[in-house]
Amino acid sequence: QVQLQQSGPGLVKPSQTLSLTCAISGDSVSSNSAAWNWIRQSPSRGLEWLGRTYYRSKWYNDYAVSVKSRITINPDTSKNQFSLQLNSVTPEDTAVYYCARKGDIGYLDLWGRGTLVTVSS
Amino acid sequence: QSVLTQPPSASGTPGQRVTISCSGSSSYIRSNTVDWYQQLPGTAPKLLIFSNNQRPSGVPDRFSGSKSGTSASLAISGLQSEDEADYYCATWDDSLKGVVFGGGTKLTV
Image 1 (tube, each protein chain N blue to C red):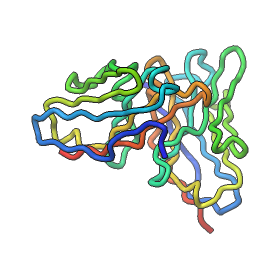
Image 2: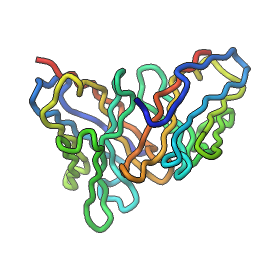
Image 3: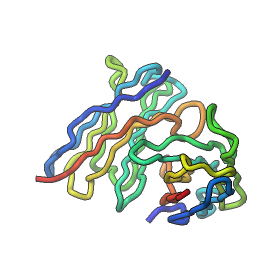
């Protein structure tokens, strides 16, 4: 059974970097058929896809235009996980952050439980 | 503002059939398949329908999806109290190379 386990701080100060990790069990971050995504959800913005990383003989990343200048998603093959870094955060980045897999069906067939991240001093 | 438009709310009584619509421009729904996600209170979204009308294993056949042109619909028949949740449509944005979501519909049973 595939599971995604999220970890990371729930409080980040403005202008600092938000960092979250998603550990994968039952699948591989290096899978040639999966893609590993980050999505966030807030009352003001709804569900917002942030970006993804995936391996197809080499590593690829795609990022949402809204955060492209501030975001990095990295795979960690040694720990079978992937991470999200969002720089220069503001209170507008306060949201529940989810990691999710694009597997064999649908766009996002498996989700982590979510992490509420509050940006506040 | 979401690129896919859903009604903010829907309601029904137990046993009824309800439908939730999702509309978007031709660059989204017409060009790609539509997923539906169910989000129960306090939980992460869960894939409910994929490829317009396919159900993942374990999803009851009371849930069905359809797509026509630039619109898609989710139908729930034999409504049950446990169906009370938020429902989101989603599709692929070829230029963004990412998923785009509807604003969500809160279903009250």
